[in-house]
Length: 91
Image (tube, rainbow, N blue to C red; front, side, top):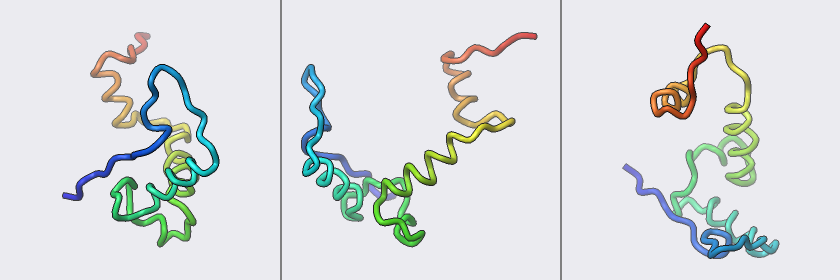
């Protein structure tokens, strides 16, 4: 099993207030995600799919897929229902 990495640097820990990242700080976080040695990505196929950065895949493919409406109950919805975060409507 591949060990998952951890982010470092500004923007990760907030001590009572939000720090808006500078362009350089944002670039550093993107580079951490793009670096295969950091093991931060959810998959290793984003480069093969022609994406310039991991976040191009994450927001363009993965998040977009999750945002599409569906008529079937997803595993996440079942989990949230079992955990009591969502109440089922009774008809």
